[in-house]
Length: 368
DNA sequence: CGGTGCGGGTTAC
DNA sequence: GTAACCCGCACCG
Ligand SMILES: [Zn+2]
Ligand SMILES: [Zn+2]
Image (cartoon, rainbow, N blue to C red; front, side, top):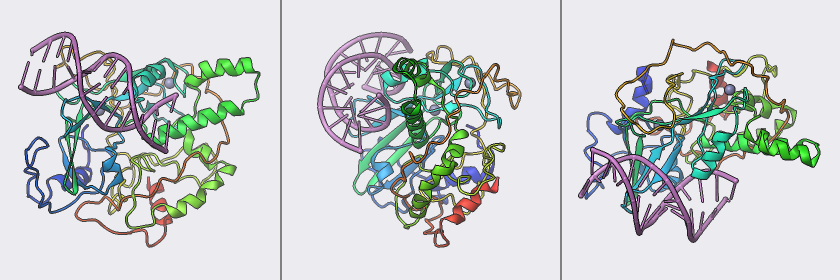
């Protein structure tokens, strides 16, 4: 992925190659540095060839999380855990939501579940879904390596994702929950239900954009409570997705309620003093469109021809997309993750920025 | 149900 | 030998 603004680069790179002192280690070294100068806050979207050293206390690191859809891969080395990127699931129709956003679903990690997922249909236009595989590492999926050593957890990634970011794990979970609730809710005959389970199960779902709106629905008011908690302590951990990229929250509370204006936090907060702890989220300005079609789930035959995304922004042509289902009101579903692990900013951790209250952050979001 | 780890085994280079 | 990857198994929330 190209990094647009420098600040973006900074945020990620900074930690790895901070201030000159090159990261002199490699995940394969017999001995890894134990005189670590600085520990990094968990990085939710590590990209490019970066390295990070996390605290062995960091829960996200312990679980080898990433907001990229990474699946375990066997490298026959129990000391080093290796994972490879699954890419992102896109709509074959390349449809767009009302507010012009694309559908980037999170590939299921489980093989079986992923196959099932690919048979489902687009939550936005009901068109067929397609898996856009990752080829950011020499034509192969980007790989991530994890190694626990001493009081640290070393992380190293190889390759730069050449596809948009998928929904975070939390968003994907929310999506599943909503759809589930939606189904259970529908007062239809068992027979119909059956059908929905098959078809609908496949797609008719609110899109990423809709999520926040749904959650903001009247009953959604269950959330506030959580809001308070999160973001409080100076050291907490947040599951990878936790309110990162496309937080279902920002708009939640007071919004123009209207659905008209979908969330506009497309590009924002890039500049925040520090991306909130553990969450470096906020989409990167790069999460951009990267159309690149013609690349599906075929092995990297001859890779070398790189096609670039069509025009800057493929016009939304969604095609005949009778907005799927009207899924409305659905509440909670989004459990407040534990917390977050400090703040990610680099250059040293910043403690709370929370002192002012969670709202601070929220107010920043709309910052479009 | 699906995320995560593990490790045997295969295949291509 | 290295790397990608398939496959089943176990554990867990
Ligand atoms: Zn679609
Ligand atoms: Zn990738």
